[in-house]
Image (cartoon, rainbow, N blue to C red; front, side):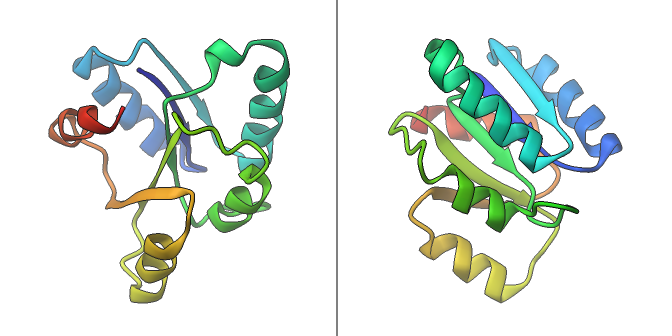
Length: 126
């Protein structure tokens, strides 16, 4: 499984890196603290190395510059059936949850932090 994690918080990324390493089934994982840089990365690998495209993207909603919702708008052109976007957020706002559940690119909405049991439960979708 190839994982891309987009979250502006360095501490969260550090913690999630440890979880992914302990999980052991993520062949590759890449972190971005900036959603625009993540889009540029996806555009680059989409044309140069499509086999490196992630199976799962964990996406934070509240980020500076480009937030998770803007990322989803920019991501529309990719729409690869094997890539699953999972919102991983601290927001428990009913409007965010409802918007995510109704978004065609979002597969799940999960409250932070990521933990190993959650990764195991996601294996069925990848």
